[in-house]
Image (cartoon, rainbow, N blue to C red; front, side):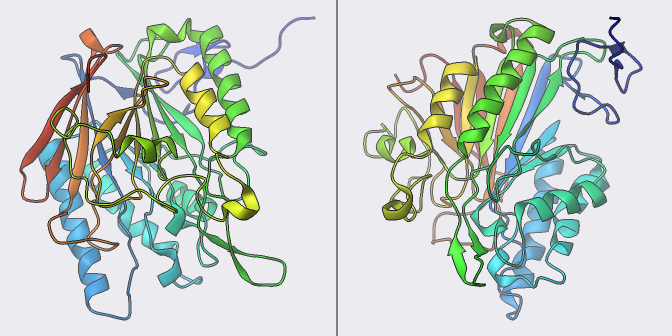
Amino acid sequence: MADTTAPTIFSNGLTSANVLNPYPNKRRILFKDNGTFRLTVFSDLHFGENPWEDSGPEHDRKTLVLMNDMLDSEKPDFVAINGDLVTGEDTFKENSTLLIDQITSPFTQKNVPFACTHGNHDNHPNITHLQEIEREQLVAPTSYTRRAPEGVGGLGGEGNYWVPVYAKESDSSPSLVIWFFDSRSGWTLDSNNKTVAMPDWIDESVAKWLVNEIEAMNEAWGPSENRAAMAFVHVPFHVMESLQPTRDPLKEPGLDGQVLEGGSTQSTVDTSAWGNDRDKPFWTALTSNVKNLHAVVSGHDHGNEWCSRDPKTKQILCFNKHTGYNGLTEPGWGHGVRTFDFTLATLTTSVQTWVTMDNGTRIHEVTLNSSYGA
């Protein structure tokens, strides 16, 4: 029987039945002509916090100023917003999604492509990850955020997807794949209308989906070793808790102001009911199957901004920089962004990263490669 599968239609007019393209109606994300690509991370914006006090809206205003300033100074080719877009417990159900309009407005105005993960404060009886995704898709033309297929992600974990980045417009396969994973957590209402905690780890269904996606990529584009990867998830994997006491701050620099403990990493909430290490199935799938994964980048813990290597898997994990002026903070922590610079010549082996503070100062610049932290 003849294959009647309709070919994928690319935004540049190319067609192929064998090439994956999750964004047929959007512009391709591309490296610059000089072979570089810059990705800047905004994290923990916490819009809508304390709306009944003058400080809450004023902090949102300052966050918008910072976002615009960083877009102008860092000049990213792509932005990742790594969770806790809003403080859901302080919002109102009837208008909470309108905060997404404010958050995405700088990217629309400056025509900067971006994509989001979602955090524990984005899941609440007044707001959910899925509601934020749907609102973003409605109001933000430069958004690449999308939801996972049905059945992938578990309760409150709809934000699992990937974004391809191409070296050239005419390329049939990407040079870099940016993964976005949903660590769920937060709160929801049970059948008795009681507020209860949600699972605080990436659901096991995402592990199977990940393996299937990589198999499809390898069939369409060739071996994974030919591509680089980055991964973003709001709540850090539990393994980061074991890295904190042993990291060398001279070799692995960055603010270390918040002790990782219960609630700081995945699978640490309500362990008496759910058990321990529930994030391990996905962590194992990720580190076993995604090749040339430069870093797994998380937010959530506002007082940390370091990168360290897991000695068992050899995987580097990084914290973002707390961006929003709302949310937990302490004197000396400050606000800013983390940026990653990729170069085609060294794409599968290294990436530069640094933190830029709200005063424009660049700090903790390092190269993530096979010798980082050694």
